[in-house]
Length: 255
Ligand code: NAD
Image (spheres, rainbow, N blue to C red):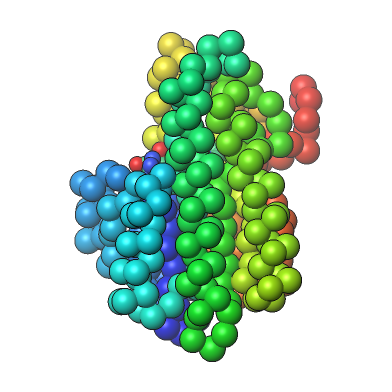
């Protein structure tokens, strides 16, 4: 896409960093944001993408980031709402501060991004156009006993994406919104969760067996799916879910 612009949130690490590395294949202007400035600035030097500090749960900062991007490129063609956190715990251990933090980042952060992106995409030169990709999870489909708050936010992201897709299709035709649902992917988020379990190797092996392909996915495998949805290659795809889970949901039971 000529003169096209993409923003990736949570782009300094893991899946987000892989999306940043892939994005120049489809977009000319690549922006990414995060709260980890050291990693963000390093990746900006490596890739030539522009790094912005942004806490996605901060409404005011969303408006500033959009203004910076419009001022620099005059448009926004794709937003990847990838930033997310995992704070584990079953429902009986879910304290209010954990619950509210999970909702603030994973759910409110995604909602704010969608709302602010649409306000720019509908004014794009040439007419309303754009693609929003929201990072949900396999846990947007299935229960995770030790991740009650996380699963709740990822289910919300899945259905929020559909409401946005229907609204934008009716109002603007070419503004699309879809969700992506990774299985267990080898990123710092999972490494931290495995360490926290007290048996990192055993927990990793367990998650590998949940996926019929028999291994964890890579960040690049998620980035490839995200780029399909972000680009015009998916111009008739909206309101749908892309599972990238090594067959986990298809098996839906002991293998
Ligand atoms: P990660 O921890 O490696 O990367 C997440 C990034 O988001 C980090 O760079 C972090 O600094 C950033 N971030 C956290 N809070 C933020 C905030 N308030 N504002 C802006 N940025 C913030 O994790 P990952 O595994 O790459 O996860 C990326 C996305 O994929 C998340 O939404 C996650 O829920 C989802 N996901 C991951 C897996 C997996 O197995 N790793 C599976 C399903 C879904």
